[in-house]
Image (cartoon, rainbow, N blue to C red):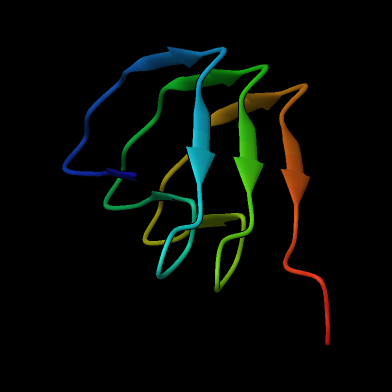
Amino acid sequence: MQVGDTSNPCVKQCTIEESEGSGLVIHDKATGTFLRNIILRSKLAGIGVRDNAEPILTANVIKVLECS
């Protein structure tokens, strides 16, 4: 999931699974509230914040890929 361009969403109690990149990326001065989401097995970061984004992240769960 990508959130950018000064957006301000409220995302709560969602499941994001098996992303090819990061599970959730917040960028380009976006804000928003991300509450009690579950992010599972992303190939890169569970959550990425960059380019002056300022999200509120509360009680999110990130589970990573297991190493083989």
